Every structure is written in structure tokens, then in C-alpha cells.
Length: 296
Image 1: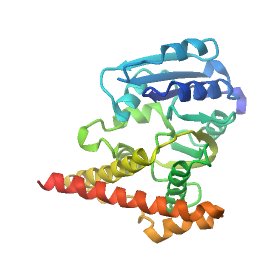
Image 2: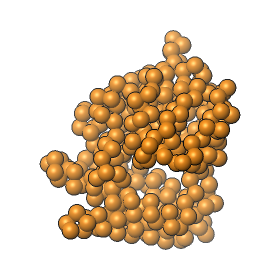
Image 3: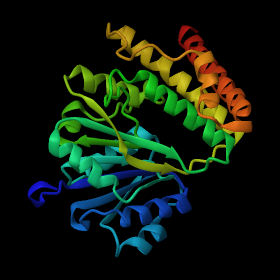
Image 4: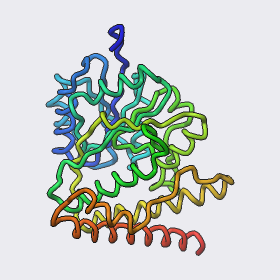
């Protein structure tokens, strides 16, 4: 870094019982090419019933580790709890099944050296390409990221699986919305508030984390159902507050279904295309179900 100045990162990891994945992610953090004294790691247990004390104890000599035990779950609550205890200049949010590459923090530090007031979204890469549900989720994520980007290097959605935010700005905005009515839409809602405050969200593809998320068919569909529910929740909030949607138009079903063929997925492409269509149907059902519940 210029002048030998390294920003202090507070890495916040919500945890919900995936101890093996968490341990792998923490070991990857310990291997990051970044001064150890400029990184703290805060693991937030989301009322799992089995806090990862043994995992943290085994890595305490390699990382500055702390754990918070929440009495209630929820990603927004976990992220905000971690942020309240953070000592760093910047918050770094990552999921417990994600492992950063060795230059993860250096890449982001270089970006903040150029523009210290932005939020930075890194690239999340599927670590399990042989699992169809994982690859289908990655395809949807990649295509939507490309589609929604307003211009090269810009992003609109602050994804909590690989996200960096200046701590002062985060606290000024009040962090993620913890209300139940936004239980599945808090990342997009935070992005809305961030952009409306005049700040930017920068996409930095060099800041990579490897995602080892392994959903079953049931959990895959449930995740996309919840995303649809979150989109409906957020749209209701925007109507109540007389706000317009900031994001660009969503990709069409045909565009998303064709994307695996563009990625040259070979014999897997038609299966991925079918999974993507099924995921979008589940998302649509989640949206409508939440809408009907509100009307009823």
C-alpha cells in the first residue's frame, strides 16, 4: 500500500451451525496476504444452539477472533451485531460457507486507497461447479450482476456474501433493516438507502471469495421463494415511502435460461437452464404469495 498504510478491516461472519465451512473460511482468512494486526474477525452465532467455540479456539493463534452469541437469528441482526462491536475502519461481510482468496483484502484496500467513501462488492465464485444447484445459483448471480451493472465497474446491489463498507457511513445509515417485513429483502433495501444518500457501490471482480454453498433441491427452491418474498416486501416499502425502484430492469426468463449455453456449460447446460427456470418460478410464487398475504 502507498506509504505503508493498511486500513483496518473488521470481517463479520454470521454463523448458523456450519462449523466445517466456517473453519475452512477462517483458515483461508488466516492465509490472506495482509498484516494480521490490521484484521479482526467477528463471528456472530445466529441462535444455532451450538456456537462454534471449538472452531474459534483452534484458530485463535492465527487470527484476532471474537464471537457474539445472538438470542435471535436473522442475517440483518447478525450483521448489525457484528458491526456494533467492530473496531475497524471498514466492515467486511462474508458468509460462513465462503473462503476468500489470498489477495482478497489487498485488492479492496487498494480500491479504498483510491476512493475511501464507496461500498465495494467483490466477486463470489462457486467452489462446487459439479453440483448443479450450486452452479445454477452462480449462473443466476453472475447474469444478474452483469445485467444490473449500470456501467463498467459499477454495481447496484450490496451482496452480504462479499461486501465492504466504511464503518462510519454504515453506522450513519443505521445498518441493515432488521424488521420482519424486510426479512428477505434487506440487502437490496440497504443498497437503495446507500445510493440515495449519494454514495456509490463499486464492483471489484478481483476481490474473490469461493462459495461452497451446497443447497439440496428443496433448499434451492426455498431460497428463491424467499428472494421473491423479499422483492415483494421491498416493493411494498417503496410504495409506502413513495420511492421508485433504483435498479435497472430485471433480465427476462429467456435471457437467464439461455445464459448456461453462453457459458459453454456443455451437456450440463440444458439441466442448468431447467433449474434456472424452476428457480425463477419459485421466486415468482414467493412474490405472489407474499403479496396475497398482505392483501388478505
